Every structure is written in structure tokens, then in C-alpha cells.
Length: 292
Image (cartoon, rainbow, N blue to C red):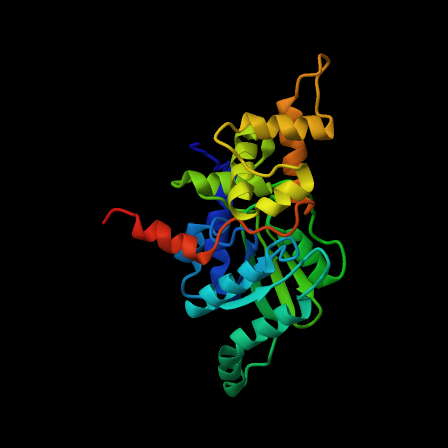
């Protein structure tokens, strides 16, 4: 599945981010706790490598808590400051402000030593579409400033938002890279809704999702859909779910599109429990298998 997803506003966003960096004290990188590697944009490392960075694992309430702890340890071992948050409920908001102030303490101490009056921390928020940037900003600002939506691509322009007297946030449109070199990355992002459903084949995404669940979370499949195993014939799983949940067409045949819509909607909404689609060990396996 070679996905090309690089609309003009995303190319423009990259240029804008680069231009604004000289005004920024710290970069807040927002990623999806359910797929911490796949929801990171490789371009971000190139653009902001010299700036202090706070990594936020958002939607942690939907992710497998045990695996989230593995990811926090993984990123901290790389020297990053990391927090697991839930922007929707507001969990972890206070910690974000404290972490940003901690990251710029050395810089601000030098400013004070030179007689420069302290000011608000200027933070840039970056992340792929639908990772929750606007929700995070609204929660931090305690009012609806940034436009939100349950689909990718809602934010179309940069804007500065004040968070009390402590932080000024610069929101940016979601940035995705031009091409997914790894097919699994595209499938994981599509499964969680980071890529617009309108440009994807939902049955293909559901096939991936069901096979993944059968491998990593088989009890969830059994509890939700009565499926004890995913066989090589994936149609069996579609038929079982369709008959159980009434996803049928006029003649009684299973409507596979309705099954796909049902499974993805329930998965994204947390009805199948807390799920994480990749672990740090998966990266190690992938690296070991890569050609030198």
C-alpha cells in the first residue's frame, strides 16, 4: 500500500515551522500513544534537532498502559523528556507546563543574568494530523481557541495562543511525510484514523486490524466478537462479525463494508479496550532485518 499524502498546506507548514524556529524556546512533539513510532514524523528530527524537546504520548487513555511505559523508557533512553497524557480529559496538563519550564531553565537563567526580564516560554507544537494538537491547546488555554475535529487536517494555519502568563503556544497544521516507506506504518496510521478514510480501502485496513488483534490481543476479539482465532481465510472473521452484529445486506449476505466500518469505529473509540499497535522491540526487529 504505497500512500502518497502530502497536500500543499503540509508543504507550506514545513516551511513555516522552519521560519518560526528562531522565535521558539522549546518544541512540543505530540505523538499517538497507540503507535509512538509510526505517528512520529521523520522530518521533525531534521527541522528541530537543535531545540529542546518535550515528547507527549497523547491518547494514553486508549493505549496499552504497560506498553506506554516501555515507550517512555525507550524515548527517555534517547535523552528526551517524555510525558503520557490524555488531552481530551486534561490529564497531564500541569506537568506539560512544568516540563517546558524545566527544559528552558538554563536559557532563561542566562537571560536573567544578563538583566533580561523573564517572559513566557514560547513553545511550538508539532505532530501529524489527528493526533490531538488542537484539543491539547484548548485544554491548556482553558477555552476553545483552536479548531478541533475527529478527522485529520482540521488545522490549516499557524496561530499563537497564550496559556496564562507562563507559555505562548504556536500551533501548526499537521505534517505528514511525502511517502510511507514501510507499508505497516501506513496501515497503523490508517487504523487509528490519522489518514482520511476517504482515500483508503477500509476493508484492507480492517484486515490488518483483525490480524493484529488476533496476534497481540486475541482475548479482546473473543470478548467483543466471539472470534477465538484469526485463520488464513480472513473472510471467516468478517462473516462471523457481520452475522453477530447484523451487518447484512438484503439477501442476508454479510456486508463487508459495514463490518469494516463497525470494527474501525469501535477500535478507534476504545470499545476493544486499550490497544497499542507497536512496541519498542518491534523497532529493534525491523532494524536487525534491514539490509546493510
